[in-house]
Length: 398
Image (cartoon, rainbow, N blue to C red; front, side):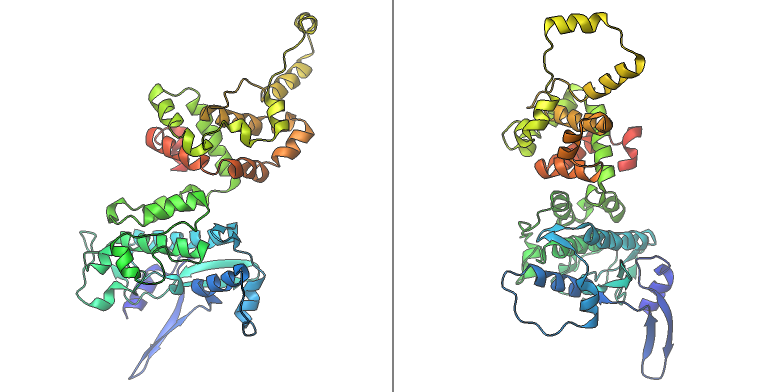
């Protein structure tokens, strides 16, 4: 009855499993839920088979396995593709809805996340609300029954200690799910998980996605009040598409070029982590470096250029193409940001061979720089979050 009550209060959301109805007899109560294809644990185990170095003989695929075989969820172990990130975002979206209603799930785990397949569309939905609870006025949830702390191996440390639990419990559990969903491995190991959770003995070495790695670390914080909320996670850069990532870097470049000394010092302190001890031009194609390096004009040609007054349109075209060619300091992060900004703003005026080199906008250009400087986005995000998040041009990102 508790599950029915919780579902009636929350299942109008697209990422909460839908209750169609219930009946009961003298022995049992029966609930009718919308039909699903598999759960997240099934999906991850199926995905792990594809990446196993020594695949074992398996039985013929079930119908749901055949339906899921056509989808790709990982680029490599630890590096999720957009479809997996979409399913993970579905889970957070469902949690945000529940937490807004002051409902804590308390037993979130991969088996309780159901996957619905409709054609080529997949949706993740939260299910199994047997021990879910509405929070009381002081936003805490206390139960004496040991069964109300959820399944072993996925509990937050405060659940294991039988302390008061609020929405932060679900966020810790989501951190475990996030790591498991993109690596196939639990962050606290396969054995002695509860002990490892209590001792904060976590292993995130398999996580290759830089934004996900930082988010998981924040979600698994042993102190509940320091974990991000579901709403904050929805806005995390891990879920940004290429257009939003580039837009943020462009806005950050504009702001940091005129930043106060305190902010600039904080920015350059991130240099070692982003550049790994070398200047950033070493990570770019030589043709691109040559293109962005201004070439000195001969004296005679300079005089002619000074005297000749070109037509407005031709002059503007030249200015647009030269906009990317500025004097860059290859050991400064803000100059790397300025290069990304200039290429993004003047992409159409660049020569075809340079366009082909950096890729199309936004996906290709984002990949070109993200693959070479994987920690850049989160380091800049940290700086902007600390110093500029309340400014008008950045509110949309936070």
